[in-house]
Image 1 (cartoon, one colour):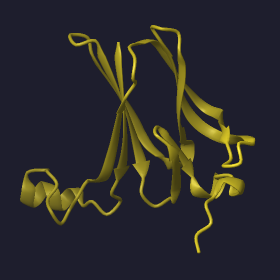
Image 2 (tube, one colour; image 1 turned 135 degrees about the vertical axis):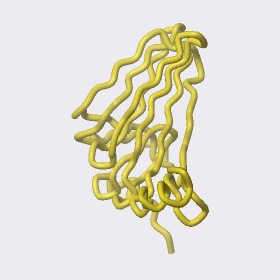
Image 3 (cartoon, helix red, strand yellow; image 1 turned 90 degrees about the vertical axis):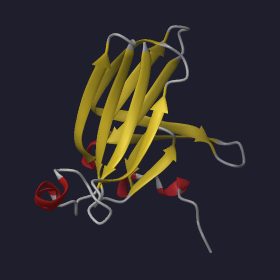
Length: 147
C-alpha cells in the first residue's frame, strides 16, 4: 500500500459561521481554515502500519561533533510502519498538538491517507519530516542557539 501522512495546522480563528453565511461553507482569503499542510508519502510501499496512542517516542541522532543523543518524548501518537522491504519507519506527534485525526482508505488505488490536524496555539518543533513535538517538551540540548 502507498501511505500518505498529512500534517495540517488548523487556524483557530477560522469562523465557520462567516464561511457558511458568505462563502457556501468554504474558506475565503480573510477566513482561512488551515494555515499550512505538510504531506509526506512513505518512500517505499508499506506492508503494515500501527498507530500507537500515549506512546513514548525516542528522538535519536548525532550532535555536530558526532556524539550520539537519545531523548524520550512522552505522550505522543506514533505511526509505526514496516515497508514491503522490511524497513521500519516512525512518525510522531505530541498528543497536546492534536486537535483530531482521520484515516481515509482508497482501496481502488491501494492508498491510505492519515490526517493529523494540529492546534495552532501551541508552539512546536519539527526536528525532521513527520515529527512534531510541543516546544516546551523538546530537549533543551537540541535547541539551536541564535545570536
